[in-house]
Length: 221
Length: 294
Image (cartoon, rainbow over all chains, first blue to last red; front, side, top):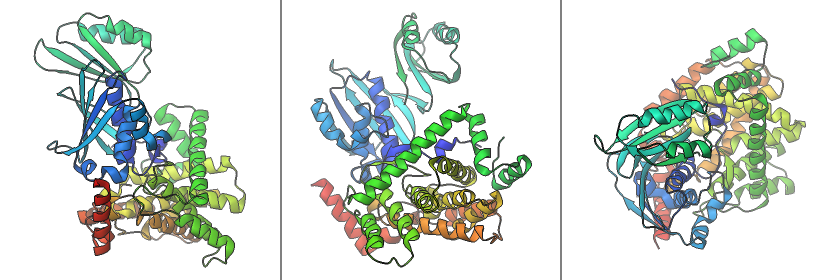
């Protein structure tokens, strides 16, 4: 059975009214913000289940958008996120929809970057402010953001994973969990690496130079 | 230094001749690898957010996003100053402060979920009121937060603190149990008495349904935070006087979990039963939805 930190019990510090509808929603928005490398022209939120039914009353819309602006779940600016997004010329819209057999608090976030590149993320708020990201750009995967998370988009070929883990080892970074997902053999793939230690920008730079890696994203919540 | 239930916690306290908060601090250090200083600093920050949310909610008429609640805390707090309170100044302050935090919560203000956002008023309301009455320092309140978290941990580990899973007994019931146990230890009671108080509190809320009107964490949540505070104080009073819980804490927690599982889903935060399903509850839901859609 799972153990808990006392701050899982006394906490999180957050903007109300609901840990799953606001704190978790902010985190999901923030993961999308990180994966879009903070460059956002417009964003569409497709809300599923309980998110779709009660998002206005719970301020889930403000929280999701607050995450897109890079806010943490305890940032009081979440209340004003509509205005703050307008000031930054970010177009946003919320649509009620059905994402199928997923958790009741699930959202699909579609970001258009200034260069018209699209970033798509599906994630669920699973209670107590905890989240699970379950899809990025159409690829099913899973991570929670509870750890420092490195998401690496790469070519599915021998040696790429070994080179990345070697760089982490050389920098004394311990891997807690790691998974690899791919679209198909020899095609594009994702590595999700959750670490116990924080990752410096310089380390990320070294990883980006590995042959076969097209991009890396660092998610810290 | 680890425990998974009340029995093990009491054994550790007795073996090492320590209080619940000391055992909890050691457990946290071992589990997270974080230093004592950092844990205390983080708890001081939580305490400050709790105090700030009370101040805001008592001084202002904080309206919720939907407009369903707001200003009730200030009303009760000020009546206590103006007139003689029915339940005495201590209780009146505790309940109004708990309600104040829930108002701030429902207005998208900053709070500490303890253990949840919907039950976030109880621990601050009780702690700040008791510390004012008896002159406890912030350091002592931080220790009380540790005691409260130990009780909350046992409930989370063996049952649930989520209204969606166990009803409001699990949510505001757990918060009140955490507050009751912490107040007992703060007032010099033994670890056994702290768990007795937590047991009384949960026994007093067994079967309490989670029926938020229009699905919002506002009503009756705000009033359940008030009764939770009163319940915590009453339970602490009984335990400090030496009243014993006939059923041990772990069995009470297990009972709460089993009762929660027996409850139909309509009564577990779905807004499909209880007060949410009354004609007025349904009308309010329709009005709020129409207001949002326009």
